Length: 256
Image (cartoon, rainbow, N blue to C red; front, top):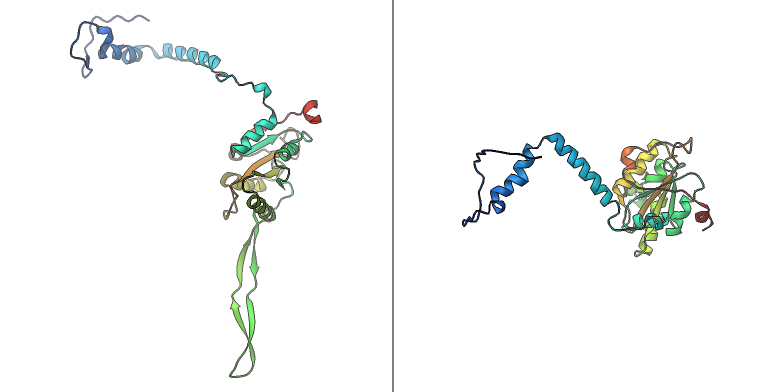
């Protein structure tokens, strides 16, 4: 790594911004340029690549836990609670009977549960209904005969899903408290239902019309295909919208 040059000709590089040069070349702008830029530019790329790999390995070892966190003392409940309080949608993985629902109900005993395995588009997003026109019978003063008069034309009304109505009522009643909407068995739902849930999770609004309350949080759970033959794989965009917690219940956790 020693480079010797008998002569180098530069153009456009400042020798030194200080005018009173006293022969201390090491402190000049040109010397700094040679060391910091020019020297690196003429080192073969394979040498630099080896140096970078070696330096990255050192940094990984050095920064593996820079703040000294005691990870073994962080429980699954702590991780779930942290995600919920940070308004990050969280997905709980685990086999059946691992206590996924129980962990959610520890945070919000009155959480709004949506069982996606039995959900329909109407139960998830609401529906549109036709409201009949209002007709009033009015007596015609000229003929003395009663005639029907349309007071209000028929119209289409958007009806919110029942779970959203209940969620809005709870969030309005307790605005300082976090309320969870829990999408259970998400991976067991058909892909068409998963896509509808994805829009709610992504935009935090239902059917493109109704925003979820500010103090509402989203948690979902489901089985993996390897654990349940009725499970579907989540699409990558849906998977990436969650923080993921893999539940592994031990005897102590179960007893608690």
